[in-house]
Image (cartoon, rainbow, N blue to C red; front, side, top):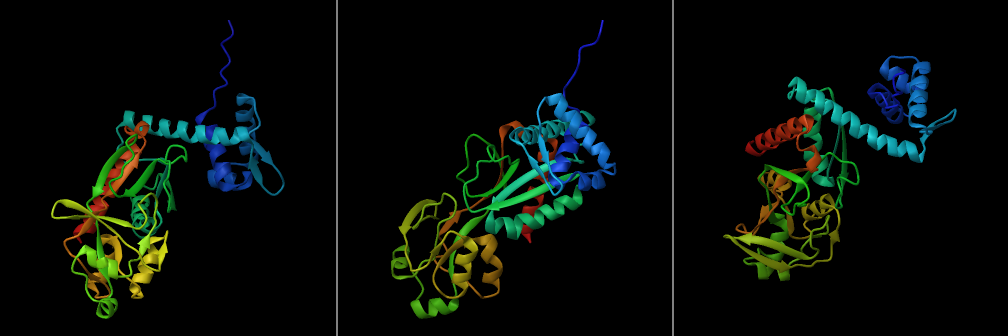
Length: 305
């Protein structure tokens, strides 16, 4: 009796396929994998024949994915991630994560704090292939294919898993020059007479600051001639003595220590804890677990310093 035909893709063919996409050509993929271009062409052909569809349009200058190729790319990433996690769990190599890890964060915090953390993560675990994207908008991590979001604030999506990496707060501050000209506010109501630098970032309310004071929450409507959807721009304006800023203590702590900014209304803060958020299907992922534990240790050590 003839054995049944098995057209299921081989993991090696999926890895070749993803390498071709990432490198942008068969030749570049063959260089990275240390094989001949003919081998790359053969594996892609075998994969396409097994799936019964064309995945890649190839020209003399570039490659382009077909619609089926784009769907195959998403499945290939998921299948290889699951395979890596399976091997990791079965061989008990929790400390040696491998495979692709796609991370996102907000623009300012991502560039200033997550990027250095990811660089150290990559040095510690060279078998990880990490991509970091930054946004100033709400991200649907499942629909957009992210494994992990580093998120600031406690408005967490209930459909995902979340782990707090470190405590953090936003504080009110301004330059000494601004306060000398406009006076130091003694209460939240006094902010009505000040230029407040208003930030519209992600899904935070625009023009309203919700603050905590001695265990209770108070809100104040603020306004001023300058507003932006980018926190670094708003911080730049604050350093130019253009108004009062509500900003993460992570960002302003060195500026306060250097005397460039001064905290005002010291008792008022806004919770801005730093969280790792990830899809529930990745809850048992070995590489994700190691990554989150690494980032937790990194940020807590940074906060202690």
